[in-house]
Image (cartoon, rainbow, N blue to C red):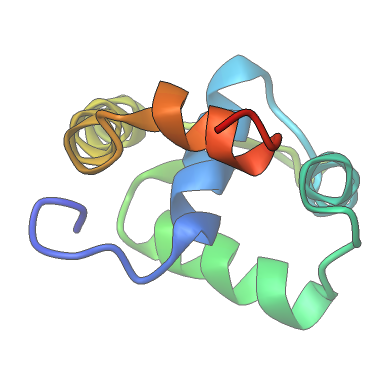
Length: 101
């Protein structure tokens, strides 16, 4: 998935967030709100979670708490490598975002 293209950061963020701990869709939405400044709609989050689950990257329990599978952990490592290659100059970008030119 990430080796060829990245449809957006949502998939990467979902894998990253769920690598820290299992969460419900609502908890994930709150975490994304902290990062993005606005809460994404269920129509944004749940289709992405469903796709990741269908690909075997996530699993959910009876309380609908999502967590990474071994395959998901492997995909996250691949995604992190891809992300770091693209944004190897993140420190410089960070300075730009905060007005420190």
